Length: 418
Image (cartoon, rainbow, N blue to C red):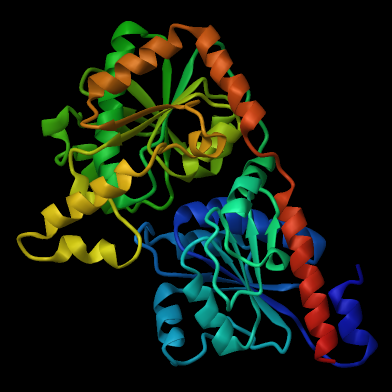
């Protein structure tokens, strides 16, 4: 494939291409946008890549800073800038307005990418785990054959490309593991998750420690959490009545009331820790797929004690704001969605079998701890789960494939505008 810079110089015309990556929440940013940006930089270092943050009920509010800190993007547009631009406002300075550009939305609502593409006069592509099609899309990429078969997209505009999440873990090496058992605690990257799950997981660690005192616990602290959220999560005010415990941060550790030590792991070490863990206690989300890809047996817990706090996509997310009755309406809507959901863990959903252990409903500390103890006391069970995960989860290579497809299309657009 001819390099883009060669095309722009042969005719003496500076048609500099631009790719706009659209993402919403932290999962798409970490596991889709960052691997894509790395692959593009490896293949075409001078390509202009702009990240556009889009509205999402699952966003943490820290995505912009994480994106800028990665140094992989030439520009980042905020949700506020997008919303203004989408309704006819000024074009964000991050966009070059090239004559040869492409919008690639990674997950989320396709209408956001379509609005950006219309304003910039770019074609629009979409990569998603969901097969939803819109006639304004030029191309839809999905991760597997089952999703391909479910899509109503024209077959010449639909392609199975693979799973980008596997590429996110490919870059990290395995940390050196000390003898013994290591349990990861993943309490989420959004404030409502950490406020409720960190106290429950810390209490679970206490009960596990009472039976298995040599187990080491590690909490992966998300960079998406601000200091106010962290202080509230440590105080555990929202979850004391449900069995959660307060924690006290001291240096690199959290201490529970019973003296159990939980190591605080910076998110930059996230994948290295996953590759050495024996078991993870986590919540539903992209993290379950990350754990599955590296073969970490997990207990995926979805406590529904505060059902109204669970975010849902689309207009239904505003139900909880209705005075007096909103909370009850939101609970009913979430319940209806969960009733239609067979699996809450992505590895289970993709494999269509119960590989990871799932707990949902009025999940207690005792539920989590007893299941964890049962697994940790039976290494043959952990080994069986690990083997099944490694046999069914996706492999790396999708980011490079999709990046090549993007560059091919940008080459075409450059030639068309010479």
